[in-house]
Image 1 (cartoon, rainbow, N blue to C red):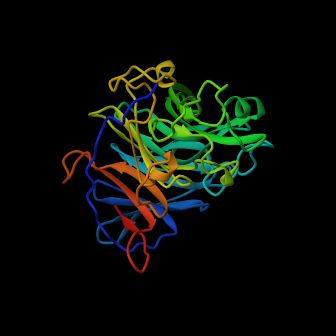
Image 2 (tube, rainbow, N blue to C red; image 1 turned 180 degrees about the horizontal axis):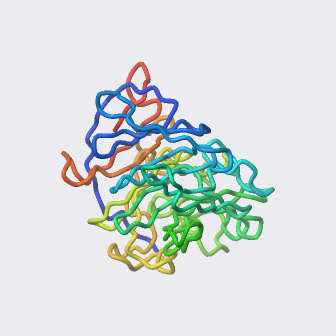
Image 3 (cartoon, helix red, strand yellow; image 1 turned 90 degrees about the vertical axis):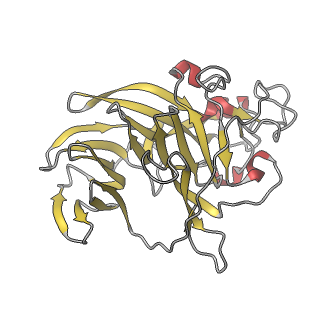
Length: 325
């Protein structure tokens, strides 16, 4: 299981000051702005003119974090589930509901993923095939936690998963692909567990389950997600780890749980990670300080296409301010 990281990326460093209270995303000359917990969103052109506003009822739900536009004028809106089942993970980024809306404001598809076992949270990504990638919590309880070699003694941990959603009808979906971080853990404290390795630093393709246990239950907290079709790879950012990652999407769901296979030959293990070497016991500066968001690839056709970008909260400048790296 011992492997080296297999990819290297260059980074374009751009510095900017950013103040925000809403999520915005541009497509075809328009920027869509949707303030979290609001029941409205607007499309604004490059001159700052509001060209369209949509308003929703309480039954249709309030905005979550991301709202995206796709070709054809369709809008993909994350929605906050106001009263999830008891025991469902809850924090500032949980949503639990996803909608597809046409330009006229008609809700074409409306789907929930919300239970004590996991809930949609933070980001989504619309894929070229029309499916949607989404981050979701993957709640683990005592038996799994003990088996993982975790030293926390916790009875509940919110691990992470990435699901690929294929919409069906008006309110159903098939999960056609899934990756779970829990399948890619490592620890060096209990040799009786299956994920034991003597060295964490020599296994950077895996997540050390015993890092950052002060953040229990939310030990990873994914908050950005993107897909690069040319390489069939996914990138995501993790708030609690101050890192961004790349994984292979070319596997099956079963293959995503393994350490071999796929285009990379590494199954669902990390192909690349960057931002905070201490997470895997390496020596080096923590570049993402204190937390990162919005990991994504620069799209094809733009300068530095295929490079990675992330929003660096706090940044590395003096005095400290947020940057885009």
